[in-house]
Image 1 (cartoon, rainbow, N blue to C red):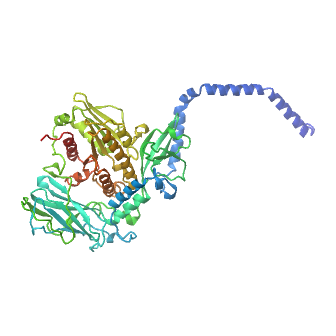
Image 2 (cartoon, rainbow, N blue to C red):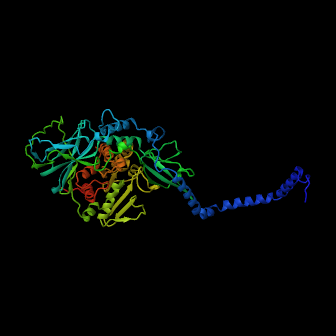
Image 3 (spheres, rainbow, N blue to C red):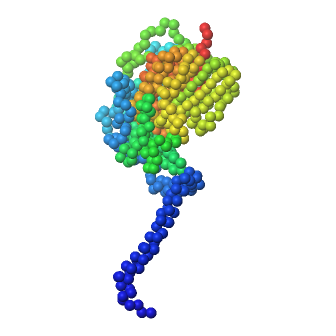
Amino acid sequence: MVTSDRETGPDHGRQKGGTVWKNLSKYTPIFFFLALSGIIFLLRNIHTLEKLNCQTVSTLYQFQSSIHSAFTPEEQPPVDHNRSYCGHLGLEPSAEEALEQRYLLESIAWPEPQPRLTPRPLRQTSDPAHSLFAILPGGGGREWHVGDQLEALVHMHDFQGRPKRHGGDFLLARLHSPELGAGVAGQVLDHRNGLYSAVFPLLWEGSVRVEVTLVHPSEAVAVLRRLREEHPDRVFFKSLFRSGFLSETTVCNLCLPTTRQPLCNYTDPHTGEPWYCYKPKLLSCDTRINHAKGGYQKHLLTNKESLLFQSGVNIKVRVHASGSDSVIVQPEKKDKPEMESSSVRAEPIRVTPSGYYFQGSWRALGGVTMHQFNDSSAITQCLKGKVVYMYGDSTARQWFEYLNAFVPELKEFNLHSPRNVGPFMAVDSTHNILLRYRCHGPPIRFSTVIASEMRYVANELDGLAGGPDTVVVLSVWAHFSTFPVEVYIRRLRHIRRAVVRLLDRAPGTLIVVRSANLQALDPEVSLYNSDWFSVQLDGVLRAMFRGLDVLLVDAWEMTLAHHLPHALHPPPVIVKNMIDTILSYVCPEKS
């Protein structure tokens, strides 16, 4: 059939289109009714639909997140100090607090080369293999007695055998008698010219041996100082946010760049302790579920710097003696002359360690008489009617685990807490003993902590009644090693204030403060948990609690003086001596 131009022209098209729209307009009320009914049905059954589709939507979202994370680097970008919260963490300190902070920072100031030089080649850095120490003659010639002091002079050299001309090396020293199970920590004095004095008190008779260890050369310490200043977020954290079927995970820390995305502010309202997370894209800040360690930043060092951190080369390597490393200590003299100064030290310094080991047992110098709690019944009788609260990191949890395992009458109450996280509770209902552990607030590098269980120690102390039947244990240090020291000072200041308030309202409360301890180091651990970070924090802790009515358990000296290898969680024999120290104060021997 042939169609004419008139039938296919524009007028015919308009007529046909108008007819179609006219017919469709008849069904408009029907379409509107169906759409309205669908909306009403959806609103009335939204919860049912959400439950039916929860698994499907969650799976799709997780798939989407996995795709996104596959193209997102795990390592966090370096902190821009000009655009982060690092510069003003928490409330500004008062004038008195600022003065104390300046004093504390000066008290732990570490010697460094002047002027600060660019990184030196490895051959010009401190080498323990080329270094040596020599025992200096005693006051009476070559004779030493109990009550005297022994001094060894350490000469540091570089890998070319040349003497070092500046200080700053991190050295440890110990005096020990393996056959007697005896040991004591020495004090190392830096003369800032490549020479160091290791000074020891002579506390027992017999043959004693000097041991000097280079933990880090001064050049490595300079790198650790730079990491602490420039990369406080080299350990980062994360939190899970969830609402219904939707969940997101974001990065959290004390210090986050504000240029990437908005932040959720979780600053504690009571202490002012700051904590931040990146705000989820689809959820609100109040949907946070938990807290966990996210990971560690990598590639923090240059190739030249990495040579400063080599196991067996310049990390915890012994310095050998140029002659004999041991002397014979005679019984104590009845009429002791005044101390003579050596040619190195202008004025004699009397070292006073907190204690020493003898026959494997720790003997405290000062305070109550030490008692050995070798069987569980003795511990049970000592803790009868007592409540023991333990707050802090895993080194405090280790004490809980020791008591819970050693004392059969203590039965752990299942709080359904994550293992190694807590909180934990053990009860001896027969002897009315309660033992509790709770981790401190962020930063905490545990696997996963429920957000509601993250509580600051100061707030927990304010909730205690206290009294003569209450023992409070505090161990807060290991998780602050990557942050500026000011962060640790602020945390201890809040805890100290809470301790003072507790002792004011309940003077009979026994407060136990555990110091930092030495640990095993390798090239990677050194960048995050080096003993150098720990000794800095330990100096701050001792100064801030000095003068208060608290018991300091000197974990630093107890791990240094012992012959067993260093470990973040000391072996059971050292833990036993720590527990014996506490119990000797809880139950002092009657004269």
